[in-house]
Amino acid sequence: MRKKILLAEDDPDIGDMLQLMLEERGYAVEIQMDGHFVPEMKEPFPDLLFLDIRLSGTDGQILCQQLKGNPATHHIPIILLSAHKEIQEIARDAGADTFLAKPFEMEELLALVAHYLGNK
Image (cartoon, rainbow, N blue to C red; front, top):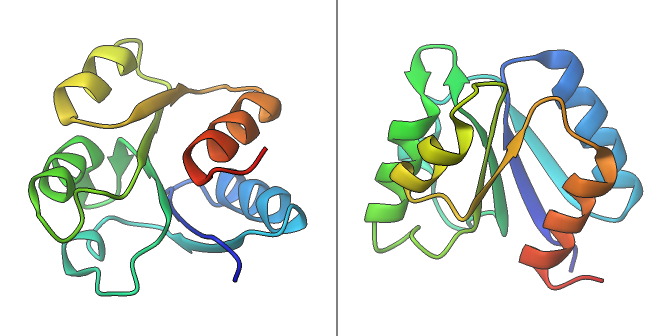
């Protein structure tokens, strides 16, 4: 079964690029343009979540805190994405597993996916 990645990204160009790249490597990818869906996620949960900090209508940092504080979703690896200069501190404070600063190298993103999904 293919590993499922959920990408919460409000920039459609970034979302499309990541979806194409990850699907070419065999992952099932779902894109959400805003964060309203995150608190209502139901099983089956994604195997990995990319969460942009600045989502329309909500704050990715708060969503990350909610997911990590929920017993049903705390196990999902979360990678925060942002061009914010304090992304490392924000990710730590939100309880994210790690972060990826925009702009990023695709190989760096793929290495993180492989690390958290157990694929080399």
